[in-house]
Length: 154
Image (tube, rainbow, N blue to C red; front, side, top):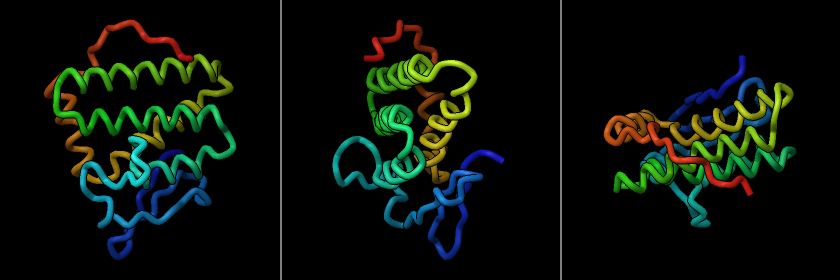
């Protein structure tokens, strides 16, 4: 079974990509439970998400780069308070996926493309509060109805 699992034991989570159990790492949920979480290097990606991206995609630089880009815009989407900023991040999420398809085309890369989006989404929305907030933002601004042409993938 492919996907992400959050295993809980004594308020400590183990975030794992299944079936890659070697890609598990400990997440201290008390440290990262708020919406913003920790981003000690201020790159727009929560530290727990960045750590997970680094572990899962260390052997695939293109997927790693797009996972980071997707994570930055997903966190921006969650953190934005203005509808136009939410829409801009939504557009960038769509552009990132379009570019991921352009750089990793065809059926041979389908699982890797899916893994990029799944790993980032599941690790970013790793608490019930974050997941509820994501769906609340979607409903409030209808952000995924953006029809603006995609930017360049360069």
